[in-house]
Image (cartoon, rainbow, N blue to C red; front, side):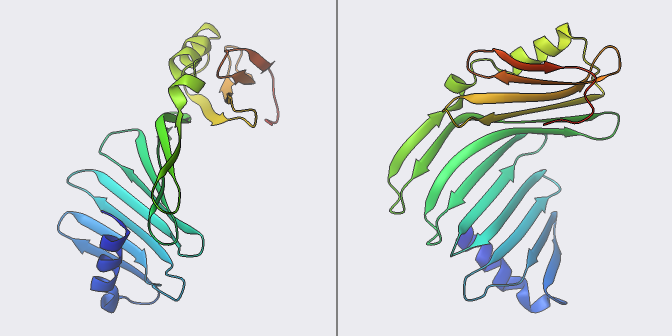
Length: 203
């Protein structure tokens, strides 16, 4: 489903709105959107297919561009597509995103696979292979936390690109002494930059 399809859905149901927001139940799908196809073509749209377990979210406008996030059922991987204001593709990437809130507080997020970037005419101009940057992988991070006997009920792991072209793992966890601990690791080399325990605040 692309931006044009979503705009068609919004126009199809906009007459049924009560106020500025619309929520529609259609078969196994729940559609929610802000009905604001205005002079800058603002869109906020969310679709959840209960039967298939798929979800789609799209937001943005023609001045700043659009972003669409989609996820398949029981899959921690989110596909992110960014568009220019003219609705041509700007980038395609994926993120691993895992959140547990019931029996434990666990959050994990980092980019995966290869990201592709395009110019406004639709030509490929750059790609980034995150596997080559995150050589110290998520599995390596989990192994390290096991050696530190981290409490699995509270772990926050976030991987992101660094300004120098490398990447960083930031890890917030409860250690075996029930103290809050914090690590920062170079994701390319695996070098531990910060390893602090009994932390009251995290950077």
